[in-house]
Length: 183
Image 1 (cartoon, helix red, strand yellow):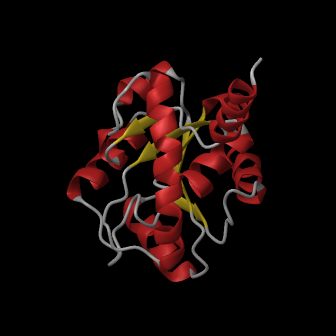
Image 2: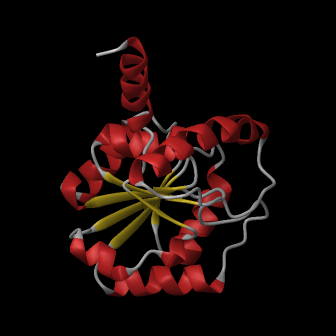
C-alpha cells in the first residue's frame, strides 16, 4: 500500500467514529418506518438545537412526531449536555419524556445510566442529535445507531461554532463515501 493510501485509510478510520448511521434535516422528518425496520424501542435525543431552538421553543410538528412515536410504544428520552436542569426538565415535561442532563457526551456515563433504567438492548436504541463530536460520536462509542439532524438555528454557543467547520470536513468525507453530494 502506498503512503498516500495509508494516510487516506487512517483518516477514514478516524472519521468513521463520527459518521452517523442516517441523516435527516429535522427530528420530525425521521420516518416511523425506519424506526420499525430497525426495531427501535428507545430513542435518545439531544435537546439544544436538536429539539429546541436557542429560546427554548420547539415546533408543533416535533410535538406531533413525539406523540405519534410514543403511541407506537417507542420510548423517547432526552440526553443533554446542559449543566442547568431547568430547561431540560421543562422541555421533557412538555413533551412527556424522561431526561438525563449533564451527560457530557461523548462520555458513556449517561448512556449507561439510561440503558440500566430503561432496560432496552443496545440494538434497539437510536441516538439523535445535531453534533458529530458529542451526539453522534457518543452514540457510536456506545454501540447504537445514530441519526444526525441539521441544527435548528444558526445562532449557537461559541464551542459549537468552533466545532462546525471540523464537522463539515468530516461530513464531506461521509457523503463522498456514501456517493452523495453535500447536503
